[in-house]
Length: 166
Image 1 (cartoon, rainbow, N blue to C red):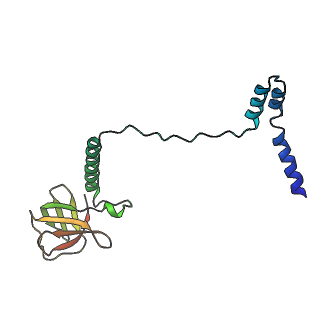
Image 2: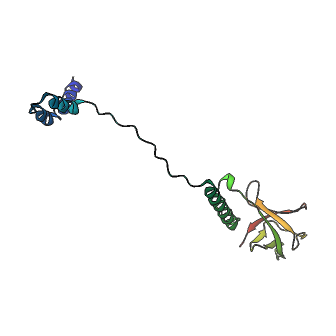
Image 3: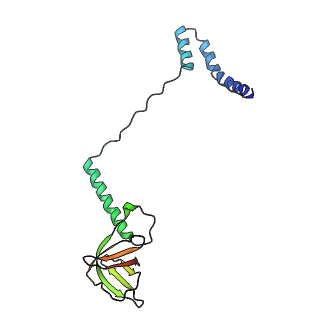
């Protein structure tokens, strides 16, 4: 019963919302104008369907060239960051570096420092007694199966777990 009373109070306010405008329609003497005034008050206005606006099309060749340039820049940026402490990267962002060894140094703790031609410096994670890496060998550095990075010599069965120093 309470809810019925509250709903009646609320609906009465909606009914009297157009009262002032309806009084203006009453004062109109011409029948057709008065009818159109009432129609404008109580008729449900139809909303026009939104129109789809299409942007101006660029030449497809320009778009393809821009995409290729962007992809090259992104790849260069990823190669530059490769091996540094990483942010969360997606699976499709995984890359590998192919380069030549410029110099190999054996440290006192039996670890190796490998300097590549691109300026990157990598250090072996595990201790290596017999050094089989040499300058001018082509290597591929990729992400390891679980974590870390693996340096593999092309056309040889040499792979070493490494981390990037510089």
